[in-house]
Length: 142
Image 1 (cartoon, rainbow, N blue to C red):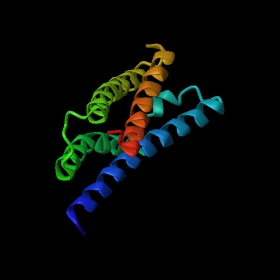
Image 2: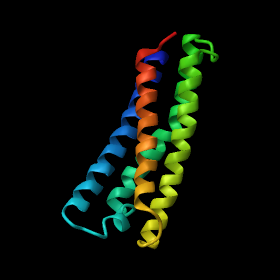
Image 3: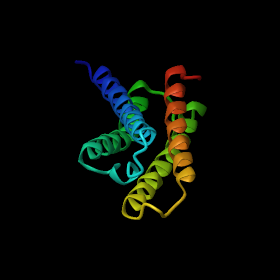
């Protein structure tokens, strides 16, 4: 396989892994809350969901490397607005994701602590950032 094609495939797989895992975790939590399970927040980091968190982390860590490598191989200048914008969105989205992970871990150990609405806002903000990045990558406005 050609290196550029392999790199594009790896980058798309990392994106799908990140967004798919986040969606799976959100649906899993939503369904548990909908059935009236008050302890659903405490089980978010249990073993089955731990795989989802791990796959999201792998996708999150690999995206900047594969993205930079793709830009380098294709020959796009790093100063393009869509590349800079997606880098900025990635930074904010990743920081929100790490903060979300810390909040959920804290909520697991102390279920009554924290504000669940802020945790939801962090999750939505991070998700919107990554979906916007995927849109920018797909449109590639030059």
